[in-house]
Length: 206
Length: 207
Image 1 (tube, rainbow over the protein chains, first blue to last red):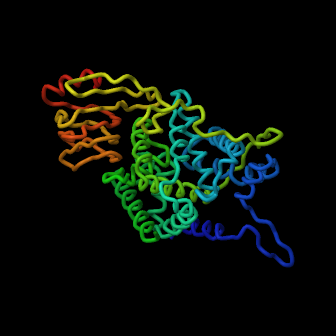
Image 2: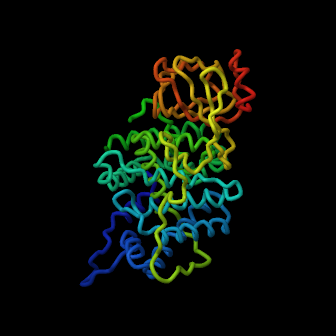
Image 3: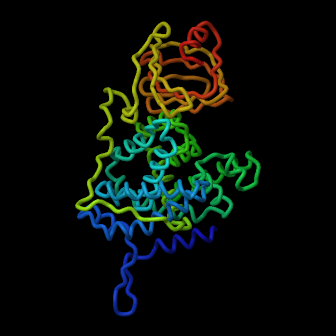
């Protein structure tokens, strides 16, 4: 069990607002903030969203080996993109964190491959707007997030770390091997094992 | 449509993480567009990334941008993309497609211009019953079948299926005797063809 991760899951279980003493204290509610930006271009909502997510996008990228400058640029562009695309956010399809993570991925691709005129981020956007095949798929969006969360907490600390690094580090097995100081073959088999474990948990929870 | 052959979880995870070569990613994307099950898996891996973002250690930003006054202007996804040809996956729309060129009897190919790719990307159309030249790989050859089917030592691959061949594979695809086959292929490294058709194909595929 990954301790750091379990803590996050606990955080995620918090309701948007909880009673504290006699009054309600508003907690961070990204869906409401994104909705406010979409509705009225709410700059205060953007500031709150930025202050929460931009440092995390930056932190995640730097953990993956990006320089502070590059990570800063991608985080800035990601949140600007959130501002522009707020009206396209559909909470039934994915959580705010997942939506923002995919925007960050697309920004990373755009910036890293700027000189090659890559169009890959357009490919991801086309796939993301693809209509769901089954009518129940939209309902399944929130359930999927919960399932993935539950499955991730069931990975061993080792498995969690390999999955995490593989996603964060742009998935170069070589890099992951170097970072963990273990042989490449071990990384590959651990990754395969961790992903198949994750897959098994996900199917159990369906 | 549901596929019988899908990319491995490692490949779908790398696709979701955005770290595949652009040509390989495009062939995976064509499959994902056609197969709801792989689309579901990709969304699960994207949810993993959302969780990792939540768990990330925040690093202070140097500044916060000022956002324009007035309302946010939503950007319509794909609005600038040219319309895609009928029957082509929509994910191909950002790319320029070359004309079909015959490269043998009842075999034609067309190139895709994928500026960011290390791999070579092309479409192949083969008439019913054709045996493609026996070949082996020094790199990857990833294929998504767009229509029709082919069959080789590892099974039958029909529309929507994904064929993930690497250096260990050595195969002789036989095209469906009735439907023929159209597929999109991304290739890295070299492909070593054998036989007369292979020798014919070799310079044309610039391998």
